[in-house]
Amino acid sequence: QVQLVESGGGLVQAGGSLRLSCAASGRTFSNYAMGWFRQAPGKEREFVATISWSGSSTVYAGSVKGRFTISRDNAKNTVYLQMNSLKPEDTAVYYCNKNPPARDYWGQGTQVTVSS
Image (cartoon, rainbow, N blue to C red; front, side, top):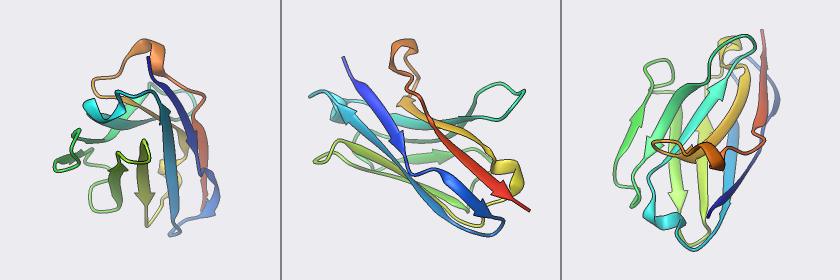
């Protein structure tokens, strides 16, 4: 079993940056591909980015490609999402999970609000 806790969200102006962190408990963290997902008000949760268990492979949603960078530190059981050039449409609650996501692993998420 893995527990995930997201942090690092906040309010930022358009064009700004934030770095999200996802701290995982459990010894099997490094076995999993991990992903970041987000859910905007009134919308379905959507995929943002994923990283392989080793960190050697990443994939991004088209809407964030070139602006966001996913990374991980298996020694620290942590996954990161560096978000640059933020846009108002990036406003959402951001979650991390395994990829593909496991229902029981969803955490509380961290709110990101981008003002125009």
